[in-house]
Length: 127
Image 1 (cartoon, one colour):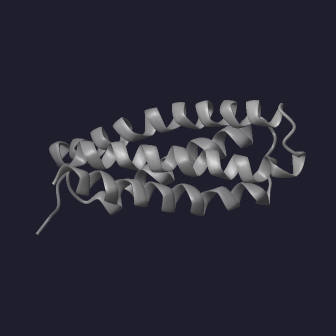
Image 2 (tube, rainbow, N blue to C red; image 1 turned 135 degrees about the horizontal axis):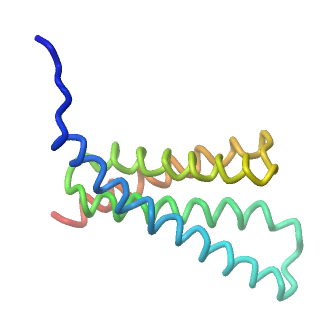
């Protein structure tokens, strides 16, 4: 049996993915600005990596949650896909601005697992 391209099934995945990815990018910027503001009030510079990972994790959970709410099923897969898409955007930004290093790879698990957690929560909040 030959498989054919089925646009409705692709849209079934693409809509929740974009519905989670776009706000997740906004949340990443918002949380980064919020944590930067915290750093100006005397938090030691050694906390910067922690705050960066926390901002990315919270953004991924938010994106996965919104994708799960929109998709209504398969929250784990939608959340992981949202986290991977968020990491891809993050990776491309690091590549464009010349800050690409092995530290970049430490963001991948936080984004994928955070997205998965958000996706599972989003699907289960609907029921």
